[in-house]
Image 1: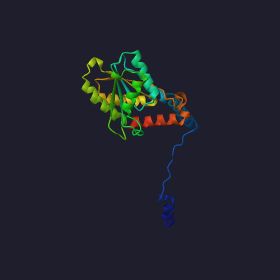
Image 2: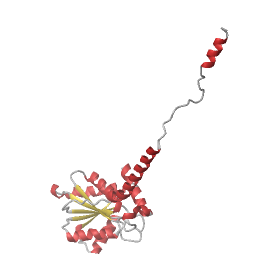
Image 3: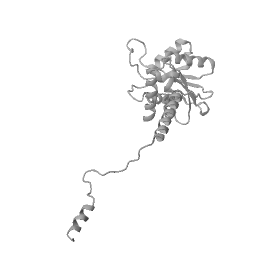
Length: 227
């Protein structure tokens, strides 16, 4: 009788698993999945409906006597600058730009700043108002490179504190990043506004249906995140 007790006791003790252990894992219910999918859908709808306008911000500095136009922008952006120069008193229009990527051997200008300045003069803007600001070549951080070149020029102008208001004319979704960079480079002494001219390459209201719109939005979001 006594010899059976140790065997029964050994059989009652469970063996410990050698490789794996069983654990209980909570699984979402259908109600949880419904809430998650609904929230994701609402966020996606909100993102699609607002992100393009958020990037393409227009927020000009009031009564700004100075204007910046990014020289790489298409001619219809320059036309808006020309209209502003004729309708409001402007002391100076600065055209910024890096060296041309292509065509410099066929034209009289080798950078976007000079090309934009010549275009504005041809459109009828008083050449005395136009100041091209060529920047050094840059593979990355082109906008910051152009802003840095402009800061050197503005610092040399000895502009009074009350006149340190300037508006940037740029294209579409580049507006928010452009203002952010120019404001950082020029410093808090300047009030930097921005005017976004809608791109004619796609319908801004349906940007998500067109490759050009999707590319512009994603490029600008990534650039804002890393800068």
